Length: 345
Ligand code: DOR
Ligand code: ZN
Image 1 (tube, rainbow, N blue to C red):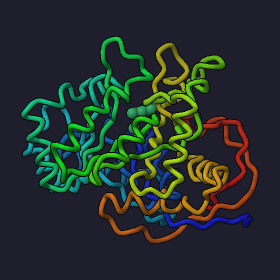
Image 2 (image 1 turned 45 degrees about the vertical axis):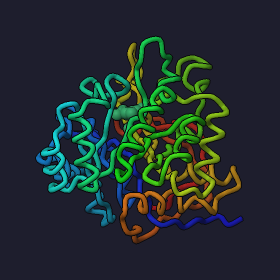
Image 3 (image 1 turned 60 degrees about the horizontal axis):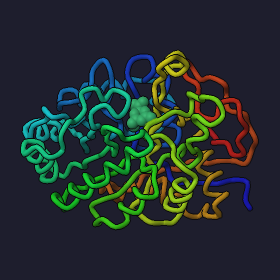
Image 4 (image 1 turned 30 degrees about the vertical axis):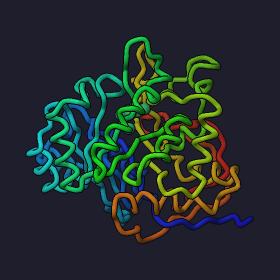
């Protein structure tokens, strides 16, 4: 076994870069290994809803951090949030501004979804999805529903019939079930047509619900969708490492400052960017499928989005290191623990 791994630069198809000082702190970390990344639109105080927002946020991203100075090649892939108020005209404008996708947050299921979509079945929203289909924009789904008498751990499963309806109604709309977290979700994505794929995060490959609430409350492992059961995690690992092109990397790296996590109503989101390539190598190595890693990080996402593969490479070396307890104002995933591989910079 070699002590050096070279991979094509990643496409991280699900990132939260935030705004203001957090943007400056977190963006350069992803740019170390990703040639492109999907910039999620659930930002505050300004959500990304229109073509104007897209241009403004892209500009903020290009100004952020020191990745320019380090001459890293990095391109943000822009998105808008699809709400009840999003019209076909707004889709056309966002497309002109360079948005590649629209993201739906169903109402109330996660961070900053207080103005999320209420109804997937309204005729007006169908017109919006049809406009996306015609414009060649992808539909990215936070696949959970907050229904009455439905536990947080069941929210993905109760969403799946909506996914089926959308996939059948819009066969030419490329749909991504973001951060799939259940065996049922994996099976559904496999069964549906080739217009449907799913992203998988590194933290859902590591965690079960026990790591969030089973040994005291661990706020830095809390995320949406909540990590599930062992069998679900097995199914995710199998899908990610199987070489099935329907499953690709979307890290959902989602930084919140320490005070927002360690409090009475802590925010959901895990900051995995500082350990992402290292964790993925460990997971794929343990599964005995290191050979499938590059397709997962750097090919299948690009192919689904219809993009050329990234140029350039990243190198990891076998070297034990301890994840810092805090990076800037954020506690990273696996803080204070040892990892066996290190990104070489
Ligand atoms: O854990 C999560 N954090 N899941 C999401 O869907 C949103 C994200 C965030 O923005 O913090
Ligand atoms: Zn997310």
